[in-house]
Image (cartoon, rainbow, N blue to C red; front, side):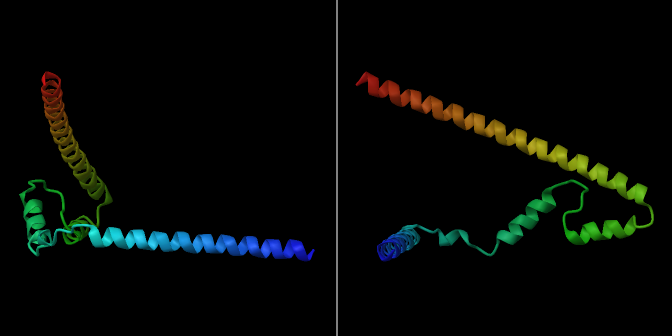
Length: 131
């Protein structure tokens, strides 16, 4: 019985030591990655908010763009839920249409990039075979 207890204690202590080594290794690797990763500090400029606001204003949709605009619109149609639901439906349809057009543009750009990459890979392979 004593032998069983001592073996159990030694087994548990070896497991704990293994966990400590694993956690220490994890901390060391995380620290190494954080110290060696190149962070672009120049991209953190204060004009980002202004650029986002400009892009929002360039959008010619009539949908509310801010919480304040959404609340104002809700107050305007507060007495008639039918009118509110109709407005929400129209805005949702416009949002889906806008999302769909962005999706199509992104897919076309991705397909174009893949085609260019395939062409470049073909040129690289033909250059290597020709040598």
